[in-house]
Image (cartoon, each protein chain N blue to C red):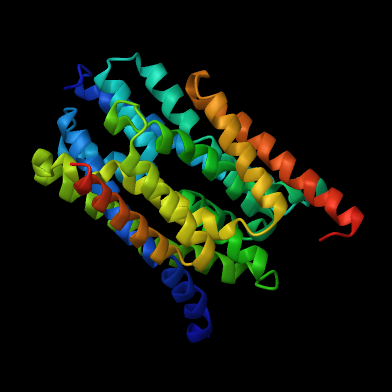
Length: 236
Length: 111
């Protein structure tokens, strides 16, 4: 029934709506930076639509400005995106039974915001079926993807006329903090988050952003082990 | 400031970056599909968001590129306020608004 199917979609849209506030300035910043780096409008827009991964796009443009070899540009920016393999794995228990084309569609839209909102919602509402979850994720992306594309276009057209004092660079950190703070609900969550922060800072010098991957993997192990220990002691 | 890359090189980067990013996102979803994952893997995967995002954001908060990597009181305060509002209200929108308001207030105060 059309009505039943529209519910998860609009639920997702509602959950994704706050991100408009930060996606828009972040997208505009990318449009500005890319055109200032010498990409034309077509290149900027194809990149933003095809790649749809802010941090990696900034990394790629920065490396092109620094005249790094093509393979280095790719290695660095793809490494920035390796965390998405973890998101992909996170979605397997929820969406593994969906048809291949739906899994491919979801994969394209698996950005930080949709992966984190999806993982949180699917864990809290374990009874939802696969179809519900696919529609929920697409709903989350409705206030994100179009604004990412549109914001980039606006930034590319307006160019360097956005003053630095707008501090658009900090839109991304603020979104991530706002998104993750409510999810630190238990001691294992807190331990995982602190492990991630400490190791990411200590390993920040490692090449290709590989420090983040080591930090994330260690944090997952810390969280899961602590959860298991607490379960055994019956303290959860 | 302007890249020395040719048009063809830029298009090559865009094509391969897009393709590579999609393959990373599709990886586990595409290959594993509906096969069951072991329990310990599922347990670890539940920690993905809190394991990835804090490590991703920590260097951006402590060493922002906009200030050449020097810790910046305005950005540090904004980050702390965002975290505090998010943790207490569990409301993403409020946390974003509070963080942004703090950032602009601090940048204005500190000139």
